View (spheres, one colour):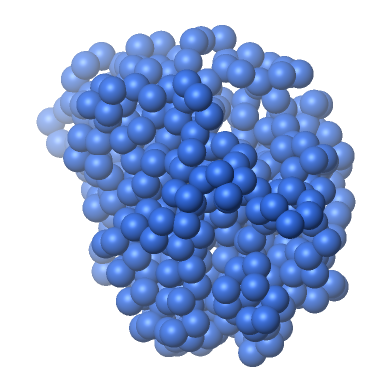
Length: 516
């Protein structure tokens, strides 16, 4: 077993007690319980840096995480070996009550393309150790990359057995494409309970993240490798669109709630400092190049989108509507990404020359006709509900011609593997790109009727199944991307075996998924 794999398998229990230097002139702090109960994490690697994260919470479900409302010095170390014999960077940062006593460290000037190990200390307590790495510089050779794609992890509907299997896979990176928490309590067939009401206040959201992080497998997955992530809707409110809530609250009131939710998201994730929220606004779309092998482009499809077309009476979320009854669907002024983000992704696709260009976002992009026959019926919360905006994205991919584009999605609690045409739904146009949608870690499936509609006799949709919980396992090299749809036998028990439900290959220079 390799050193890296040994570390990944053991990371949930590894705790080093080697002393770190104390802050000069300060007596060591003492806590009645472990202040690192939420674990450690890293994310967003670049050639000379990454984000290192932890949040102090000796009583994680209590207000303020059980911390006094004071600024606390936190020591950090980054080493070239897991025994910390060669510490390459260290320092003191400050855990402030205004940010939930979270810390986000971004060390500078690191050696590119190598592994590092990190840990924190506060008082006499040392955190678990995390493993991370710096990216290979753009254009330089990287031979392979293994990524796990996860999403939709409703606490109440299942255990996070997927992360146990992800750890056994020893991925290089985890991509999370949304619904890290669920703000509401609407789950059926519960196996465990949130124990609190729907989230509205900052303390509500903080406690919800703390509850989810109490899962040992999730904490271990964060410590095992860097993450890149972007939220979907449940980190704030189901089906929200910009300043419009599902329940059609006064926009100013909803934006106040959104500001609190975004702050809690930042506090609890290894996000770079540029993502510090400014009230209800946060910079979430970003890009990372991983050598000459892959570029990862994260899109924010919630914060800037136009309101849903033709909502059901009394609400403003997604709806299933016939195109003939909803001319708004074809309004070219409506947007999913907003004009500025559209221009940004167009520029990224024009400039990035990596072998694989992964466009990563939270919802289904593929064309889905949800009613048999001649009538066109769409679900308005996905890209189907924003067809002109989707066409602009397809135009960017076509006109900018990035090498080997691949779209990654989530949200629908199902595995979907499909190809997308130059004009989605128009069989006379060529295949342009492919999409792989991760099923949920634990959230219940969308229903057979939705899957039947997704398949819908369209040859571009190779696979659609909502009966399985799990994740996507992607293996990239210069010749191909192999996608394994990894399904857990159960999420209703704390542990589970896993199997591969289906596998697909996308060959470099060839459009269209192939069964593997």
